[in-house]
Length: 379
Ligand code: GLU
Image 1 (cartoon, rainbow, N blue to C red):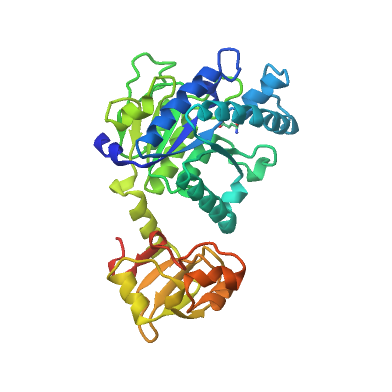
Image 2 (cartoon, helix red, strand yellow; image 1 turned 135 degrees about the vertical axis):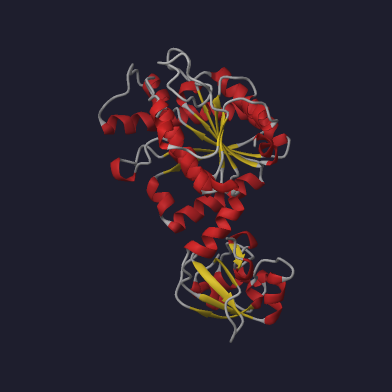
């Protein structure tokens, strides 16, 4: 089961405050240096790394001289604002040693629930990864309050696997793995190496965090793994204080706990399933026979030149069907452009998109990765 980890290419690595800070709660530059060296190594070996990092509130507490996390929400928000720059400063310094740039992305629940904003984040992350920049994501604690708060970075990291189209989530924490009982209370607690599916009883062995500046505990990590499993993503929960933990796990070493997605589905199958079965198309593109042939026989993306007309009123990112006039739909996918924009660029060459609209998101009207052929709908 662990042997499949070797093939994972796009990793979301969640780093908790508990491993970024020293015993006094200060950001520990040595930890940043070690984690940056390990991430740089993963990138050098052809993988892409996205970090979800906590530590803003912990850093803000130190900067502003608080020994414990304040209770008032405005104070926590202020603390996160003051600490976020300190956090990024450490990452910048640590990655610069390896010639790597970092980029900060702060998200709220609203950003991920809004299709347009979700896509903006996805597209920006995809570009950063192409340029080998390390995206470093945190919750935008300063503007996020109750209703729009995700609340903990474990759950945020699971959502990020979907935004970043990652195939593995690694949660680095200060304990070794998931156990069948709370190891802090029970010395006979046994480590679970692989979990095929998360059973509610596991939550009983999950302890909550006790460290100042930290949030969550094992409970939120299990919640995150459950969410990731729904996206077809495997999760690993491991001790981030262990040297080269990620690389060793990818190489098959029996460290931490691996939580598998349901029924062995992978991210692409899960996505295609979602496209084919869950989404209701809100428009249709009529294409010419040449475009149909390119999509079906050659596995190509749909370009504007093949589109003959647009039916329906839809926005960028909406699900739409593709068909030849007089036939049944043969494909479904997420549109890179709104119906209004498509009305202007259909039938034209990709090189003309920017001239016509004044901007261009993509060459493709529907990218291959965002499309499923209805003839071979995944079960
Ligand atoms: N966003 C919070 C911070 O950076 C952390 C939340 C968490 O640790 O789960 O301090």
